[in-house]
Image 1 (tube, rainbow, N blue to C red):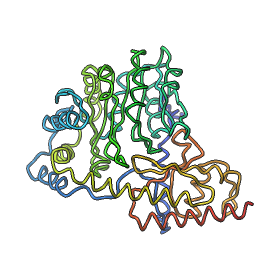
Image 2 (cartoon, rainbow, N blue to C red; image 1 turned 60 degrees about the horizontal axis):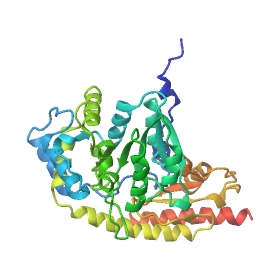
Image 3 (cartoon, rainbow, N blue to C red; image 1 turned 180 degrees about the vertical axis):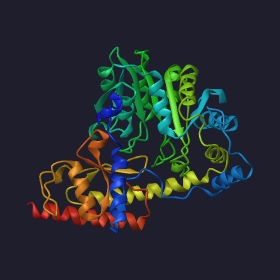
Length: 406
């Protein structure tokens, strides 16, 4: 039998590191091993009741058929209103697109615009799917390491040095997965000045964690900061993080009409419109009571404070306090070169993550999967008791590693 031949871009792509860890957790739990999972990027809260009720009403009222490819007009009007109200973007409902999750927004945009050899600048640490989607779309990722010295954020000087005639996109994510870093207005303005001098570069602004800002910060998005760049910016968001709706799979975007038209054309031959029930639920989320956002943000901020304090008390780990999202990005460099309690040599941050799972029954994701090691991405989207229990297990692991290795 001949060996099947895959698409060359798919053959070179890597599976999601996050889902790989989640699969390991599922396998351990199936074997009756108790595991505390700090790897999934989703809120642990239930979707608010009025949103669930809207979904059930949609089913009972027969809203179960195909929708327009770009989404229900009522939902697109709500999306446009959100962008006007919260982000100061002067857009109409026709300037929006609804997709089956934020990931599809990104995939549609890159697939619609990238040709072989086109470059996409991605600051690291990055969400694991960015470079893989670029790869699947035939582009080339230009990864720019952004360490703790810059607060895990891209600087204008880095951006200016990286742009070439082949640069097609810059991807910005603020607040960031995995670091929790948040770009301030002045930082975005500095990046904007570089972009204004390079008109061939499009920008994908991933604002999915917009409402998870701590310490009284005000959110800024690039199209809001520099209006002259709006014709080149795709601003994307969704309901997954803000309204605890990860499984509903609704993302949305606004941007230049030529790009949205191309993305809609692609989506029409791919998935067509997003799930009709989920769209009605998203409509209720955007137009209904918004108090859930502030309540959940307060919970996450308290968890952040607890997690950062506990992690920084552990030998071998250090963690800069994140200012957004719900991840702690902890440096584990001091553990490398040592042996785990079971005797495994910890050569990389992935070794540390695997040992924590197999020996301490705590699941985290290694930072090198996000383009920057040696770190551990630790999601604190879990109840306080479970987080404390997980931290106790991590502390015991670290104590043993540091004590037995001199």
